[in-house]
Length: 391
Image (cartoon, rainbow, N blue to C red; front, side, top):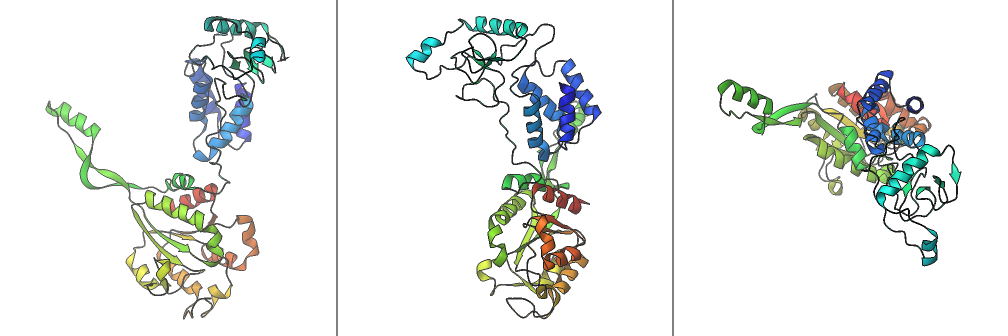
């Protein structure tokens, strides 16, 4: 059973190794799961899953390999612990239906009968009122009715009264191919971290306090500054026109970035970088900041992120006067090269699916200028982008 589980994890592109498999077996041997399917689920997940993007893949494999199994019984004793066998509430059945369903008696008798039937039964049973099976009135099984029952072998509950529903996938939006939400963006941005201690000493240094107290013989409390993400980030958002359908994802990215980075600056542009940028879209024509001033204000150690679809006329990149909004004295290509000469850690995030990039000449031009550091706005794309900025 566990060998199949291991190979299915590998086939689902979750990076697992023999060492982790042996760790799981050793943990089971010393009783870490305690014959509880929930404990086994969390134990195996903590051993095999090292990245959030694989959580949903793991849940799907686990559900397939242990579909409907509500226990892990010892081969010798078939012992079933009581802590996960709770009494179910009464089903809302008509009096006639209730007459057909006979309770086995006390809770202890139900558990004892279940253990006996597990030992006696040798094949799947359909219908009926005794064996563990489906579509019957036995207290043990699936797709049936009994006010005092234990669900075994049913993927989802039909009446909301099964004791265990571990296979409810809590992380189904954490796949590396899906588009992002604020929570997912935060999880991806956390990989772009470089902690440093800044400010006043306001956090207890437990290790140093213990050492100093032991050395001096009296309580000597040591404090240190809080840790903050020391990386500085500069974000440029393309706004308006073809970016209007992507406002929501840009807002989510902006919200997540503001919560993750202490040193964050942002500016807006339209289609391509030119001589002016702005922070208030309502005053984009009256309150612009000179791009050259921005390049001189923020040091070269800032990480730079451009967010845009890169869909525009190629003339907007290559020629003076190519902008659709004003006469630009110098081409967008010139301004982008100036920025890239200063900031070596710069990437472009594109909300358009990567499969469509080849159909846009302007997109290919921008991608080439960024030396292929253009990434799709998916969890996988953002993960790769953060790795690039962290180098």
